[in-house]
Amino acid sequence: MKLDDYRLLGRSGLRVSPLALGPMTFRVGEGSWGSSDEEARAMVDAYLDRGGNFIDTADFYGQLGGSETLLGEILKGRRDPVVISTKYSLTTQPGNPNASGNHRKNMVKSVEDSLRRMQTDYIDLLYLHMWDFRTPADEILRAFDDLVRAGKVLYIGLSDTPAWQASRMQAIAELRGWTQFCALQICYSLVERTVEREMIPMALEMGMGVSPWAPLGQGVLTGKYTRDDLVPGDMNDISSRKAINAMTGKLTARNLDIADVAVGIAQEIGCTPAQLAVAWTLKNPAVCSPVIGVRTPAQLEDNLGALDVAISDEQMARLDEASAVPKVFPIDVLKSPAEAMMFGGVRVQERS
Image (cartoon, rainbow, N blue to C red; front, side, top):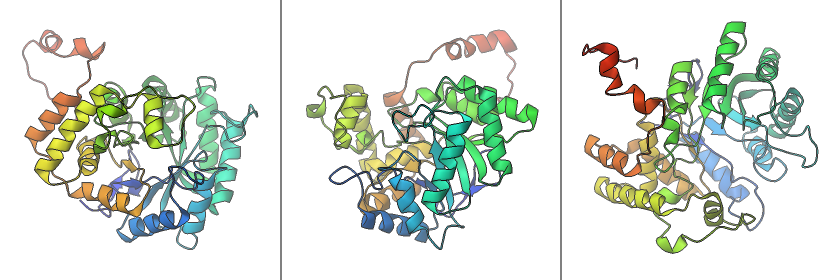
């Protein structure tokens, strides 16, 4: 597989690379975990030179929308071949009640601001960034559709939204003839597989291509952390990736156990643990294009090597055993022996 082996994004005709470049590290502030402008430009250049065309940002990334601003500067004069996805929902003006959330006012204002920052006339793919539990679904859907009809947005997607809301909105859009979602961005990795219960089957059924974020488990799967790092996190400390992982509960004994298995199998294959982690997500048929959130050109080069990694069935089984999550209702009762009661011993092919 190569970056220019393009895939269709969900139930759409949009062609995207099998790995998306995530510029969340662009212009996050001096002395932080972000990339310098020179590193950012080098990464975009290298990604595009290899045939990549899918770059995923958000209005919230970087200081004062800095990720979008820098991306617009870097892509000036070569914007059209690139599929740019961005997101709205998170606050851009703390204290302003209408400068955050999923509602129409914030959506329209966020799009106008994103267009200005990125120096472009249109956004290829606009995601709802996070579900706010307040805005009516029909308001969101109609606002999305209006922006598509106006030509300011071409495709729409959902990120970090409950499966029941995502499937409900997709059905409403289809029935009313409004623009449907073609993409679902969710956290998915060897240390976060709970989305396999509802989110990923829902995406397959409803025509949304899955674009996982944090396929490296926020770096946990690279093997760089040890048991000495298992200390309580400070909820106000975002000075480093390690601090963020401790604060958000990603650094756990269980996750380090999974990382140990991943590191061992990577050694067997002859690849890096990061490459193995990204390659594992691509084995899921629902996954279209994982987002690689790299900080340096060296990290980008390493992550792109995931496209060359072949994982055997036996190795997949060991990774599955190490990272499996408990089943939940109703999935736990809908398999055997329930299948025998439903079909009476007759074999019926499942939908793919």
